[in-house]
Length: 320
Image (cartoon, rainbow, N blue to C red; front, side, top):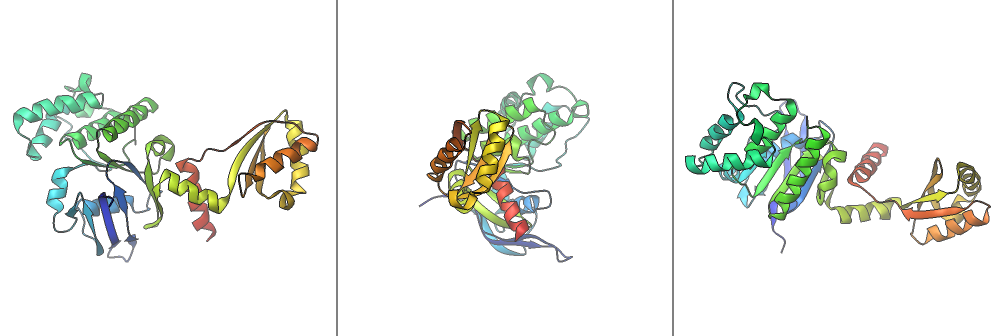
């Protein structure tokens, strides 16, 4: 039986103005994975996280985090979970180190242990050289790193990170990804809420796509990518010798799409991007291209990404 770090049942939040922020969410986050909650701004991500840690109460439904009830045992959850909320703040006139020591005291971490832990987390997030600078001197990216440091103070089993790479430069985002890999290898569960799939989506092993408060799909990358391929077909990139070959092949295939089993077809300079229903259909297509007077240099199946999956489901609900 699989054990979940987070599980919710019909979790719903309706605000007084009748806005449904989170709508009947049944979420399951396995232990020890990097899990992405993907959705555009306004999809309900922050509201969902707030309910998970007891900052706001659900209108209906229930849930558990690390086995604790999100309504009755929210204090225990906050003791066990490292939270990086969107738009968190620090005391500007205190240094990074002073801020973290103060927060450690609020978390009930003994002073001697807190001093040691603050040194560790500042090193982890790359702020050791700036620990004695006042926070008002920090850039936005440095403040984001400091926010991650405070989330790590308790050495939590579960990290809940809301838009954690906002404000980070490319090098900072890369450092963040490496740190998340490290924490996952240590057995921690990392839950990342984001709309920046190109920055952090690549590191997630599991995800859920949230759209207007509802989950469209959830599961491991392999599970969801498999669903998309079954529904939308398999995409292949065919490289030909020149744009001239591409034009010739494109015209010939456009006239024979149904016979060749082609679901979608487009050109990209010296390449063709072709969607077919089954992998074996591509052999028929390649043979047809070669016989039509063009020349196939290489062909390979297009590797799916979380961004492709996200786009597919958003297009699907948009058309629906």
